[in-house]
Length: 110
Length: 240
Image 1 (cartoon, each protein chain N blue to C red):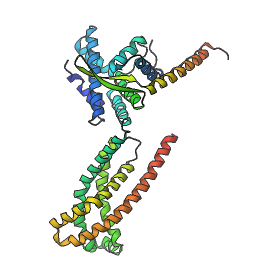
Image 2: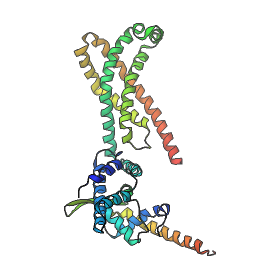
Image 3: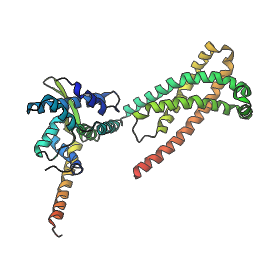
Image 4: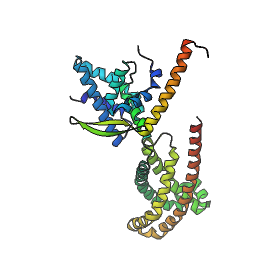
């Protein structure tokens, strides 16, 4: 089952930062990993990925470098120190969000 | 794999991004991404034509992407170097437009200043004649200035961040124009007059000297007004 676009949109930043915390990747690789790890639940319009990555780069969370592989020059993205801090912050926010949401959905009383 | 099938899509996505480093890399990334996706689809058993169609579909709506790429490119325009380059580009366009228009109109208008009734007609002539001489020259100057800076702002407006007030660009251009007129323009204008209008040299030189003062006043005025407008707009945007 796929989640709605609006719901998934808010999590793209966290997903991309998390994926890049594991290893440096180029755009297509990021999309593939995202689909693979989430079992196709999280998919974004593939053309939108790059403006999104460029914005993260502009905010200083990631940076990019060119690497040639099999004669093909590609732009790889990697996490910066600021990006790592942002990721930690977002991860803890996310766990608070998930716990709160599951309490509501299960109907637990405080 | 031949990439003609993705050319239209890519150029549509990047239609609002001018040539430069950002566009170069964005194009490269899109092309590489689409080639990889198409290859992976054909390897999974899909026919080539269908794989291409599926790739184009998976990439998303070009109209929407066009806006996203433009916004992402605009966010990159924050460095000092970028600002300096854009300012110089603005100045160059404005100076190129302004110089011929201004010089030609000035030569025509000298006659208008000298003989207002003959030039402006019976209605406007006496009014202009009664006005302060400096003010008449200022009005004459406003026409080519307005034309040049309007063209400059129109040409360069799309290259600036959406939240930048166009008045900033015009104001910056005017300041630079003033510096340019004082440092280079005056000497160049005298030379130009010597070549074309020998009998008017002294008269024109007088006007040029006066223009320095009025252009400076104009620059300060536009600077203050545009600064106020920009601040107000920025505050509204921040509040929103």
